[in-house]
Picture 1: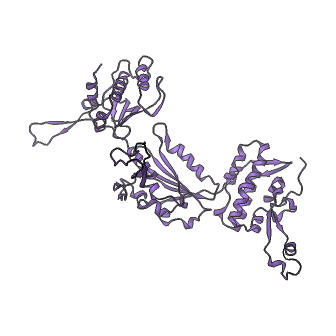
Picture 2: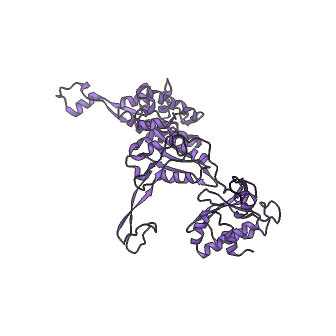
Picture 3: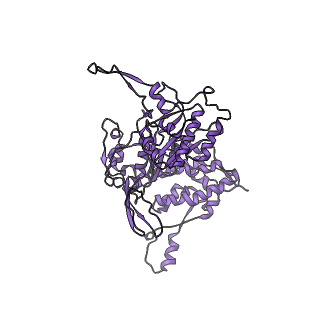
Length: 507
């Protein structure tokens, strides 16, 4: 078995190891030595990569190969080591676990049992410095150098391949309840999450108080109480107890950009919910130019800026996607910041009543077709207002997964707590239009009408007596919600049926 000094010499061909290893504790160095020997005994190879956070890898590579078959990797840091690996021979899958004695013991115990990863029994794994011999590249030296006929270049450290896919700037827009956030959540799992790197995204929601400091970078106070140690980095000034120290902290966008730059072989994304509710110029600042596809890092017209707080030169990596959602009921697409309109693709997500096809809510012998109900609601809203304020299908999708006997109670709750209040907001309590949307003007039975109009003549007499000299048309009509209609299945059928149900069938 090699002694510690000899073993460490195998890893001196990379600056990350050379810089960090001397700062490790004795215990951390011993753990690294044991793990290195255990992996080597399994017949697996060690090699370096230029991707920060995964500088040291192990698996099957062999000589003469530009890229190895990855089994695991070590994240090298000043304060220690993290281990990530795929499951094999009794070792469970790990994601950036701190290297401990128990983990190393698992690797040391593997070689005593069946090891599927070893290509051939007894094979010795390669060390990082072994590739300097086996993967050499011979370059001819110009004739003027007479004492050397050839030069041997060491093997190149494995680098992460860059993606060929162009970056995406996309905003999904539409009325509420059309599945915009649901679409984002699907993308999070399918395109920006994997077992090796975990979550490769940041998720933020814009609002009126959200600013540049939260999104890009800004100053944050660090307050130390008596008896507590300061939480700032060691190379910054340390405040006394009870004092305030300001430090520069990266925002969500800067954090995900740094991760993407370190791993150019994967797509990363910043997801922005309610993007139209924030002050775009205040939040993005100078970065509104940098997110353009042709201004990204490495692009033909790439642009870099100096950040105002840290003073660092910054550009946006090409493997970052910027994806947002926009509720058109909050603000029309026509009012969106012009800077966004030029730099983003806009994908419309409108209500899809067909998603509710086949959903029938039955109560008291009356069947309510939810697809037809939503279709008619939206046709009337579009005629009286616009298509940006229609009702999304997501308000009713829960009905699909419910038992038939529970559906009517859910439909009633949706109308009482969500649909009717939404219509009040859309039409600014213009109850006559709300009655038209709900089809109340076409319902023959008053108990099936969701909104009742209170008579004007009775109001004049009750409010002002007989000597009021007012015309009945002087007063505005008053309306009130008929809570009883929410319990009548025929009230819902009357929204879309030309001939509303006259009576409820017996239960």
